Structure formats: C-alpha cells, structure tokens
Length: 353
Image (cartoon, rainbow, N blue to C red; front, side, top):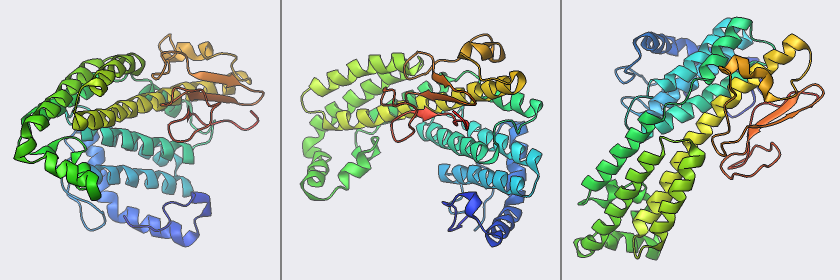
C-alpha cells in the first residue's frame, strides 16, 4: 500500500486523501475478510493470497505487518466516516493479527507480533479519545490488554535460535546479525570475512558455541519477568565480555538482549493500556481522578500489573483533571513521563493534568 501521506497526522489529510484511502481499503477488503475468518480458526496466516496492492507478499513477516497496517488505516477511515463500532472492531483485528504468530517458535515471528501490537495501539490512540468507548468495548479491550503474557513461546523461540546457531558451523552468515558484519566496508568488514574462512574455523566455532550457550541461558531466563531475567543475563553477558576473543558472541548477544527489551516493552504497553482504560473508566464513573492505582485493582483480577522493567508499580501521577501513567522503559530511569527512544513508555496524558 503506497500512500505518500502515511506519515502525516490524519487531521491534516484532505478529502482527496481520504477518498484515496477508501479506494485502497475497498480493494483490500476481501483480504481483510479472510484474516477475520482466521481469527475464528486461530490461523495459520500464511495461506493468504496477496496481490500488487501490497509491497510484500507470500510467506513473510513483512506481509503480516502490512495486514496490520491495513487494519490501522481501516480504523482511521471507519472513524472518519462515523462507523465507530467498525473502527473499534478493526483495532481488535489489528491486535489479533499479531497474535496469530504467538505460538510460532521463531524469533522474527515474535518481533513481528510486537510490531503489530504497536501499530494496533497507535490505531486506538489516534482514533478513540477517553470516554468514547461504550462499556462493552472498554471491557473487551481492557480485558484483552490485561491478559498475562505468555513467555513460554518466546523462550521456545530462543531455544530454536540457539539450536540453529549450533547447526550453522559451516556458514557464519546464519548467525544472528552476522550478515551485516560480513558486509561492512573497510578493515572491519575484511576482518569478519577472514574470520569466516576455513583458516579461522576453530576460533569461529568456539565463538559460535559461546553464543549458542548464551542463547540457552537467555531462553531459560526469558520465562521470568524482564527485571529478573535482565539481572541474570547481565551476569552472563559480563562473562562473555571477559572471555578471550569471541567477538561474534559478544556482538550477537548484545543484539539478542535488545530482543528481550522489545518483549518487555510490548508487555509494558499492553499493561499500561489495561490500567489506563480502567483509570479513565473509574474517573468517568466517579467524576474524579483516582488517587492510586489500587482503585482499579478490582477491574484487573484483584491486582495491578507491575512494570516489567523494574518489578515495581508503574509510575502514576494524578492531577486535577487527568493523570500521567508510564513505565520507566529500557533505560531503567524515570524520565518524568517523557516518551522517546529507550526512555519512558507512556499512556496518553489527559488534558488538564
């Protein structure tokens, strides 16, 4: 779907652009209908047929991201035309498109799922202001967002990654992130290309097995909340860093830690949505902003989810007419609710805070 104005805020779109979006979505509707059917069947996603409407097709994660993006734009279009119930259904569809990958033991499937959830969250935030959802819609979305994370399939994907690494001793380009290294220009790229030759194979194999062992440790640790897994894996990474000449293991392990960070960000974003929606519900019912997060615990199974990055409650600052709710994010620092790269992950701030 090639629309040059996709990066614009929808309040800047012209009527001609809205019509163009409507035409694209009308062409894509048969595909979206197939995906909705898969929600009942719970997958698989790959038999779907794509056409020239899409920038990628076939059995690819890029195609699935494109499906989710279609639901995102369908959400905006439906709301623009006044079909708010259909817009809400497309938000749910965007979330569930990513969920079709939840049980796949492939790391890129989980990274794609996280990306789909992020697009679905953006679709909701761009379309629905606080207080717009009816009681049934709010309960449906908040209950979805509050579903406990399934870390087991993510751990299984890491185990598969470790197995594939251990099996790729004859082709270093199969190791996580190494294609970039071997294609680097200059002296550094030359080093990695020489490192992949038979002459250096004993050193390379030692390096590779060190990375595979780290992945096994990471798979075991990732079944725990991020804040516990991170402490354990930091020790493992320090051990790698102190081991003589395993450059590939050190570089690849650092990249895989960022994957664990992406999992925690996805968990935090969903938990913030569940809590934020319930706080807005509580404010609508009582006419005042709750003093503490405990006020919505009964909506969330009796306890409020904690920040996966710290194991502590999410940061919550009530104001006169609104509130600030956020996770400290990947830098593990409280930036006061400032949302930027590696900083806080923020639920929308209400006007009048």
